[in-house]
Length: 199
Image 1 (cartoon, rainbow, N blue to C red):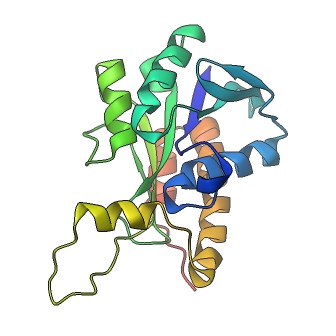
Image 2 (image 1 turned 90 degrees about the vertical axis):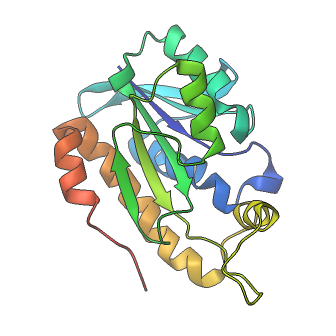
C-alpha cells in the first residue's frame, strides 16, 4: 500500500496559497482517479482506492503545515506503510516556478512540514515530489530576503500569470504519481525531473 500525502494548511483562507500546492496537486490527482476525501482519521482528511494495481491512501493533514508529521506518523502506523511507501507532495522555494523534482530522501532543506515529518518518523527515507514556487524578489538594494518576506510569500496566492504555469504543473504531478505507481522511482525521476512548465 502507498500513502500519498499533500502538504498544506487547512481552511479556505489558505486554499490558494503557494504553500498549499501540495493540497492542490493531491486534490487534482484524487479527482482524476475517482477517489473522494470522505474520511477524517489520524488528523487528516483521507480517501482510498486502487490505482494502477496499487492500493493507495491519499491524505491531507489538518494539523497545519509545521506539524504535518503528527498526522503522517499516525497514518503510517494505522495503514502499516513501509518507509518506501510514503510519497509527500510539497512546495519548494529552491526550485523555480514550473519545475518539479522527485527526491527519494535527504534533509528538509528548511521546509518545516518536511522537517516535522522527518522528526516524527525518525528518518528521511521517503519519496518527495517537490513543486517549485520560486523565491520572493527583494524590493530593496540587497539580495537578502527576510524570514518575514518568505512567510508572506508562501502564504500569498499565485498571480494570474503564475496560475497559467501552475495549471500545467498540477497535471504533471498527477502524471508523476501514476508513473511512480506503474514504473517505479527511477523511471519517474528520469522522465519528470528534467521537465519544466513555462509560458
